[in-house]
Image 1 (tube, rainbow, N blue to C red):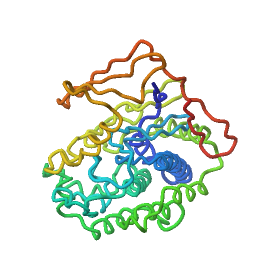
Image 2 (image 1 turned 45 degrees about the vertical axis):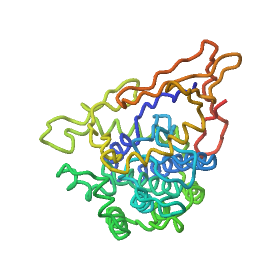
Image 3 (image 1 turned 90 degrees about the horizontal axis):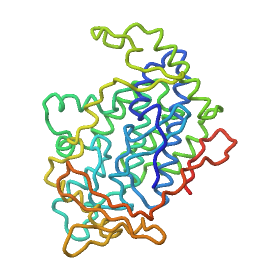
Length: 365
């Protein structure tokens, strides 16, 4: 079994909060961090795509980071080992137009209707572009101004997007988001624009975007870069008297715990970002969206004819029984696992020796 190392900085959402305070003389440091994290994100996606996997839920909340400059693409719960697919679950706020349009045809799908399919890799790239832009904008999602009125009405964002959003909606929203930053046609913005083109055929590939960001990587290693970032953040937190909303009456340092010169995420509310409503559970087509996972379960597991017990054929220890798990219909309960005594965990990941300024990769044995 593999475990993700401790993400001491938190998620990409945490990072976007920190970066929102880097302004003026700190612009250069912020841009270096965004380029570095964006490159790491695309490197992770490229490895998945080369293995035929579509993540389908790329967003800042699914990035994990440490203060040593490690970046992990996390939460594979929506991933499917396909490129062209029908269905699939994910946060609608990061869907591209093609993924929305395929859902419009999915409910009335006819055999051979290609309109009821989409390219999962291209959709991942669009979401990655939004995630990088999100880092630049700070806490605010690039499309937040369109979502706020819907949230205020307690309406469904997935329904709203399916019924209302067009190519013009996407293009106008992206241009408005780009307009919030200076020099938004060069450097990293050129990469983001390539990743967020509304036409999947014209959109930049994962590899093209990754290579473009590699040219923008800072000279500093990830560890040195985040060490500079941490020290600067300590200065900002100690100098600040209040958070952005003065009526809250608490200073920035009260939102953080300091230990061994590390800043730990402590008390920033992000309740809106974790609602299952963003995943379309209220849609009539939601059940159909889950079919790729049913097919995946059939592919990797063998079901008993009399029970709902599945066998994970990929986790069979030498000289022992394979891992089994039971599917429980109630989504509030997790699956139950039986781990054989003979099962032995593999060694933890080790770092490769990379002397360059490009981020080291975790190597699994």
